[in-house]
Image (cartoon, rainbow, N blue to C red):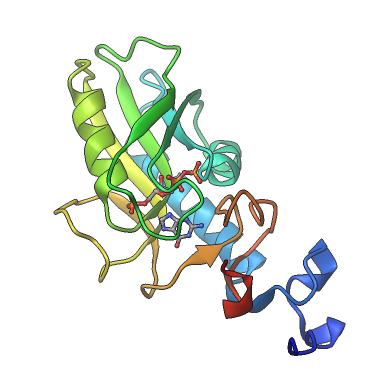
Length: 196
Ligand SMILES: O=P(O)(O)OC[C@H]1O[C@H](OP(=O)(O)OP(=O)(O)O)[C@H](O)[C@@H]1O
Ligand SMILES: Nc1nc2[nH]cnc2c(=O)[nH]1
């Protein structure tokens, strides 16, 4: 018999329509938003008004972070989107990165800032950096909200990192499990019973 879900007042998923599915909040909404503002200020400080960065949002996971980040930046930015996938509905990377949607813009001579939600194995970002570098940008920096330092399999030095987190599968604030939970405003941990 399945364990009863926690009482609603202690259940972080319940107010968002996911009762009994999440066990805990790893990074709450306020802490996420404070970090987004801090990262936006740091990136803006490294750019000038006459060279607005092109934010490359890595769909789908980085969508919440990118839109909050752009709005928190005290300088203008432009935005483009690339959809790549290496996880499908699994919790570990397949290592095979597929482009599902390419950029609309030509990034030749542009200052590009890749906006990522998470660096886990690092395989996605490592592939993306090589791919974008070959297009002749003036510079490429990376801002990631989350990083799992103990899970990284390839050497990467993202310039701006929000939080280093343990090697656990997280959901929320853009991050999904089988396309669910992206809409949560915090980063949390799923109950073990939710994994198929
Ligand atoms: O460092 P890695 O181990 O490569 O993992 C990081 C990538 O995994 C997630 O994308 P995913 O492939 O799940 O696609 P999604 O963003 O559309 O959910 C996440 O958004 C990162 O892009
Ligand atoms: N949802 C989710 N997607 C990921 N992609 C790489 N790592 C993770 C993770 O911890 N959670």
